[in-house]
Length: 435
Image (cartoon, rainbow, N blue to C red; front, side, top):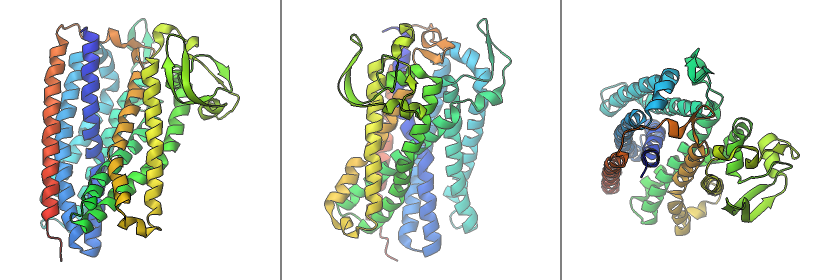
């Protein structure tokens, strides 16, 4: 296996794992502080038990996110030294600020975990909010760095040199807002439905039902609200991509020929050799409207760009279709959840809880597909229109062995986290929550 393929495989694998740990670690503190707030207001022992259980989950994912994130930081230098040589001075600010947010989160987590019955109750609760806010800030700052790779700014590129560096302009690059908004909502959606699905399973099995119903309601409320907002952020992202990365948009839609009033494809099988999409559902003029707000706007096709600059069309198209399809499924699940406030008899039906059990992995499946669209759709560039991925890879041979090492590390992390969470649920189910 060539170095480039091995490096891409390793980066893809580790990112696919880290993104799950990071999103859960970023979102779960908000579930915890809502439960804590309800405990302070009602003094219902169930909320105290739930809060202390969720705080252990927050601690577990903080540690695993830190380990997997640290490994990723080493990978940037190990796998892509030419990229870091030039990009480091430009996007060092968001990474430095992310480190600061991480330390604030760590300090607040320490106060929260060990502050029970030692700190003022309101101050103790506020430290939980700080954990959540600093976690979200960390995620947004990392997404700013990734946004810069899609929309490089804050420097002049002259004769292969990166000159007149402006770190502030790089931090607030044209892609940071749309990416940060879309990814943050995706994190809340995925984590909300995943955590809600775990508690729905316990309800389905009739284990400590009252506690798990309260947990389910908190988690899925966050997930459902985020899911309902996600189409708005998706529209913002689509219009941004249409303007800045038209070749990525064309790959997402497997749109080969430039045309006005371009149709939107739903589904379909891509044949890159014949440049056809078979078995698709075509909605006339919808792509033009979604991209530019005009049913007759011109949408550039892949054939308007040099073939060596085309992303892998089939992968990008399929990932985009999966992301959108699963996203709409989550929207429907969110609507169903809010309807259950009116149709309270649904809560007594096993089918209702089974539905949300089945929805547990859907958010993360959509999130992973969206990340594939973002990263694969940018290829062959590591810095869009500036540096190709093949020019950034390490010349060191035997990179496949590094991949095997990371495969073992992340597999162990996944197994440990799974065991810890299963143990935590067993303990929770045996807890007596009677007042």
